[in-house]
Image (cartoon, rainbow, N blue to C red; front, side, top):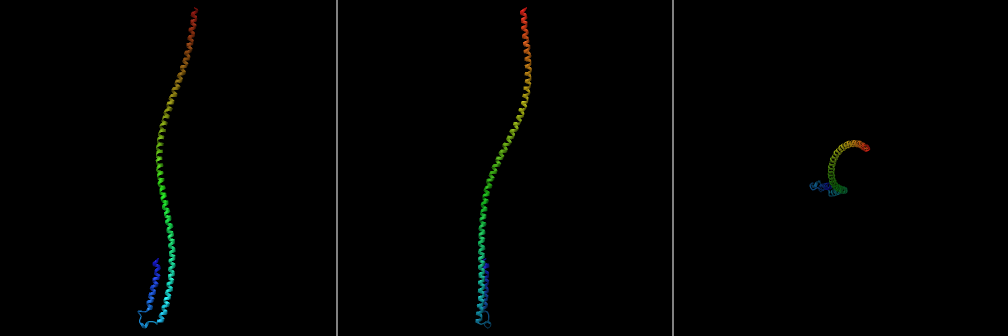
Length: 187
C-alpha cells in the first residue's frame, strides 16, 4: 500500500522536476529564452498548479491511508474474532476427544460385560438343557414307579382278598373244629 501511495507523489515530483528543468532552460540558447518576468510568472503558475495537484494527491493519499487503516483495523478485528473462534473450536475438539476416549473406555467395558453375560447365558442354557434332560429322566422314572405302584397295589388287593378268603376258611375251619369237638364230647 505504501508503494501505491508513494507512487503518485513521486510521479508528481518527476513532473515537477521535468517542468522545473524545462523552465530553467539550461539547455536552450540565450536567444530562444523568454524574458525573466515571463518565466517567473509561468513558473509560479506551474508551481502553483503543481502544488495544488500535490495537495490534492496528498489529501487523496491521506484518505486512502485512513481507509486502508480502517480496513486494516477491521481485518485485525476479524482475525482476532477468527482466532478466538479457532481457539474455541480447538478447545471444543479437545473436549470431544476426551469424551470420545471416555466413551471408548465405556464401550470396551460394555463389550467385556456383554461377553461375560453371553458366556453366562451359554452356561445357563447348557444347565437348563441338562435340567430338561434330568426332568425327562425323572418323568420316566416317575412313570415307571407309578406302574410299579399300580402293580403293587393290585398285588396287595389280591393278597388282601386271599387273606380275607383264608380268614373265612380259618374261621370256618375253627367253627368246624369246635363243632366236632362238641360232637365228640357228646359221644
